[in-house]
Figure 1 (cartoon, helix red, strand yellow):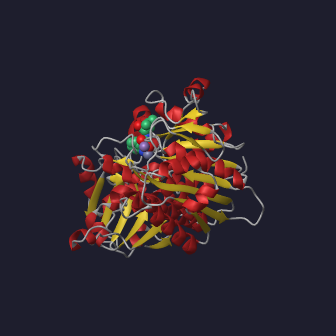
Figure 2 (cartoon, helix red, strand yellow):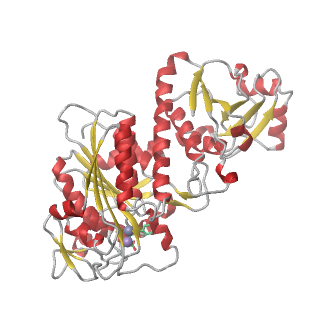
Figure 3 (cartoon, rainbow, N blue to C red):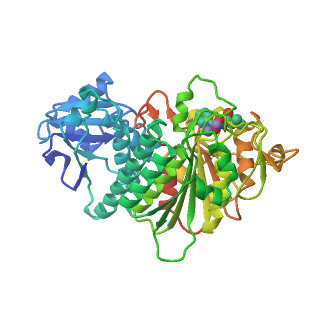
Length: 497
Ligand code: BES
Ligand code: MN
Ligand code: ZN
């Protein structure tokens, strides 16, 4: 997509369509709208009277050939109440615009965001447009569903020339955030026969080459050499070999300690011998979303040339039942040396994260964030609306909350109490991997806590926000890629803790 910037008036734009983002109005007081109403011989007044368009969240309306406007078409996109206006208002409105069919087929459009020309609004608008247009076409064979229409040129109109460099940067950042989130959606949607641990590793390697970071891949032998007994306990049931993928992005020459991101990469979770029920088991193809978020966040860091050092760790394996699979009750020794009694082979994510969190120590991290589709209980506590976060550092937790605010990827902190830590003790080994249903999200984090090093740590459980079931303005039905904007924003705004 071609992006252009212009300080010309909306009237002067020579392309086929101008999109005006407008907050909710009861009377035509805004000068731009007044003018548009006059030029269109009262079309807006008519719309307003008929209540067809009043600038509400989600509303779209189209005016054709409004007088002296050079464009053929004005699309009005509702932002909702002016008092509640924030970046996500633009993200949603632009998401709605992305599904306006005739607009997309007109090829080019100008976006006018209104008088409040804030960077975050520009970033959010392009994010909303690119995210809303996402569609996975790779597995479709018929032509009709293949020819998806999307604008090939957007001109951002702005009032104040002096703002141009910053607004341009904000738009470019929005493009990177949205494209990286769409990369997560693509990877998470790709079924397990098309995305095995080896294929995921290949993808990581390719992206590393393109974007200029390094990718080291540990195979089974290397993983065994690292004594990752918890990770291998999950991998041993599968015929597909596991991979432990290590990404390294150097954004500064300084010997600054890296931020380490860790993502759960279960390319398919059957539950193992503690087999899951068949209903909706196909959804477990996306149990590698955490790893995809980590990969895409490192890509984002590289594309934005973020001046930090970032490490991405992606333990990747299938969780399969078989004659070689780990059995409930088995005891294994983790990389850290702690013994784990595997009560439930379906609590596999925490096993692979345990060894990855311990491996993170190799890089002497200044902070570690792990992200995983870890527990069904996340959905029970917060519904589909947000992701539980837990950790050991109020400062790092605050960073995550601030990024959640900016990116509209909601998080909510939950506690880890000694009672939960107690729950995870084993009678005959050091720890158990499951305490069953009570406090499921918390006990999973309490388990992970046993394996972290002496570093600030936050765990993000995205099991609740991974799938969109009905379709939202900028989130089509399917895998959402949630977590990418959060981590990319954390990295973008990073400063020493
Ligand atoms: N991958 C699942 C968690 C999950 C469930 C993600 C639903 C997305 C939607 C995870 O490996 C799992 O099976 N967790 C178990 C843990 C239990 C056995 C302690 C769960 O949440 O039921
Ligand atoms: Mn599981
Ligand atoms: Zn899982």
